[in-house]
Length: 144
Image 1 (cartoon, helix red, strand yellow):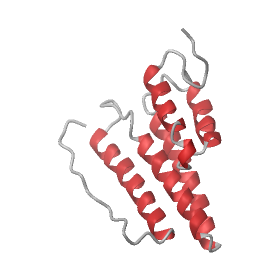
Image 2 (cartoon, rainbow, N blue to C red):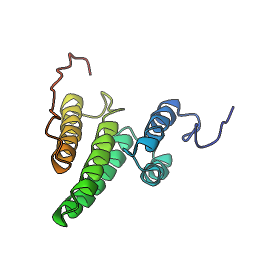
Image 3 (cartoon, one colour):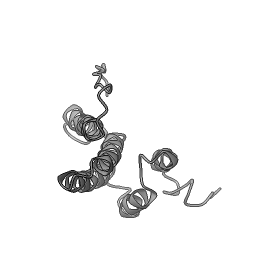
C-alpha cells in the first residue's frame, strides 16, 4: 500500500522513510526545515543502494546550515545563528542514524557524527545565551 510521499518518501525503503517522517515531525517545533529535508531526500532517492549515502547527504546539509549560522553570527544575528546551529545539529545527528558496519570505520564515523551534532547544539546554546544549558556526555556500550 502506497501512502504517498509524506509517509513513504522512499517507497519500499521503510527505514529511510520512517527516519524522514521522524524529521518531518520536528518541523512544527522549528528545529528542521521541510525544504531542507526535501532537498536532501531528493538527492537520496537516487542513492538508496549506496551504503554511505544517508550519512553523506545529511552531513552535507548540516555543514551548509552551519555555514549559514556562521554568517548570521558574523552579522550579529545571534538568535538566527542559534536557530541554524540547532538545525545543523539535528541534521548531523540524523547523519549517524544508518551508519552500518560496512561504512568503515563504523565507531570512528559514528563518533565524528555525534561530536559534530553536539558541537552544533552547544553553539546554538552559546549564540542564544542559554547559560543553564549544559552538555551531558552519555557513554554508549558497544555494539553501535
